[in-house]
Amino acid sequence: MAAQRTKASDKQSVGKKLIGQLKKRYPGGVPKVDHDVLHTMLFGICLEDVSHEQAVQSLARLEGSFHDLNEIRVSSITELNRSFSDVPSGETRAYFVRSVLHYVFEKFFAFDFEPLRRKTLEQATKQLNRIRGLSHFVRSFTLQQVLGSHLVPVDQSILKASVWLGFVPVGATVEQASDELKSAVRKADTPLFCHLLRCLAVDPKLAPQIDSLWSLPPEEGFDLMTASKRLDDLFAGRTQMPQKPSKQKAKPENGATTKSVNKKSPAKSSARKKPPAAAKTSKSVKKKVAKPATKTKRKVVKKK
Figure 1 (cartoon, rainbow, N blue to C red):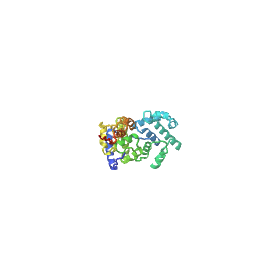
Figure 2 (spheres, helix red, strand yellow):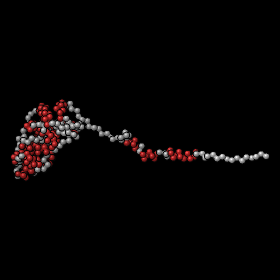
Figure 3 (tube, rainbow, N blue to C red):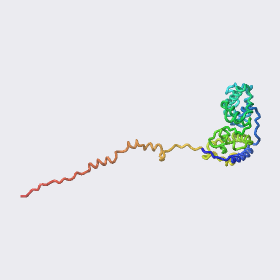
Figure 4 (cartoon, rainbow, N blue to C red):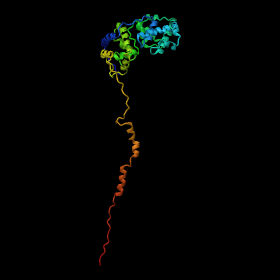
């Protein structure tokens, strides 16, 4: 589906307006994430597709359920999954946690990942890419928090909200959405923008509606320039949910139903037809053709 291209200046103008609207519904500043590098990554794993509060609770359960990080590293996915019982994709999160701890311990023989702070963005990105299975969101969140890079961490929930608002074209991936959103806000406003966008994306009252709207986009895509009005309508409950097209049985082009076509199929119709009229006509013609009349000679008897 073709994406509507919008100038960076227009994106920033709309982004600034949306930040003001979202702040009214979700007051409060950006929650602080005051962790070392390793715990920042673990928190990012807990944060994907859920609220900040849920992530805090998940990380607290994870650390409280085990003696230390080494015990978490050697535990099974099933055991780790219990810490994520009230959030989606628990097994995936458990796998990410163990992958991070395995990588850091085997790399440094300690649970210390602080050397990442001294790397450039390119070097740090390459190192994080070596961690098996780590999602794009966790990598971007870590780089944003640890290095202060101008990145917009995007998970599936934020992707849907961004598409519906019109910042991101329909069909984009989380990687593409992250790049698109960078041009929507200034670097200084990025943490606040990300926080507010997450609040909208995981709002239990609004997320199901956004999901429905995102799944059935208009043919031309979502218009960013009307995002502010559509957001107001969403908050006020004036948004009309799209209707899914009903499934209808395909009909033949001539409008006839399948059954009627079968009844008039060539095989059956030819079997019921009588012999061609032309054949009858030829026979009847032969019977009715009169032979040409022959004149009979009469003998004349002379009278005596």
